[in-house]
Length: 165
Image 1 (spheres, rainbow, N blue to C red):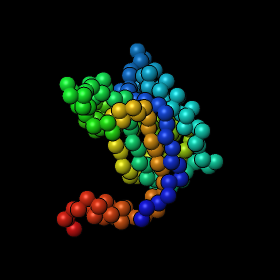
Image 2 (cartoon, rainbow, N blue to C red):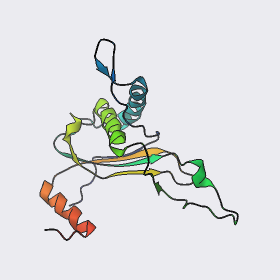
Image 3 (cartoon, one colour):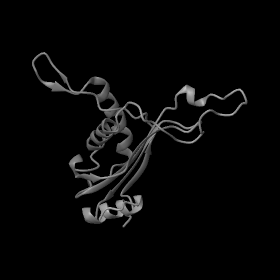
Image 4 (spheres, rainbow, N blue to C red):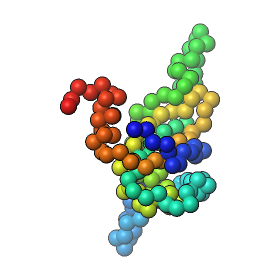
């Protein structure tokens, strides 16, 4: 069953992966300053969409991470034809998708969309380059899980044409 998102928004910010924890001279772990700065900027944008009450229960979080398109993907060949398609293109190099997701979930936790990011039980994550004239951004949809894990999994299998089960 497809649920209407509780939150559906586009964040006009360049996605940034979660930085590795650093150790102080006294042996305490801390988040790198660049990561904290990005999370604060993202939180300021997210705060505009914070629900009146934090979301409760199991949640589904679908995210499209759109990173800046590199210059080589904007070039034309000698015939004047684009070497790459003008639409969204898969990004299958660094940064790791899970680190992008971690930084976004931490920023959302700071913005108090939910009680804790452990409430996110499933979702679809995509990482790609922007359209030819598009901007970097993060598109986020958060909805209540509602269905059982088995029904969500079986629906996913059916959509992908899996022969198992």
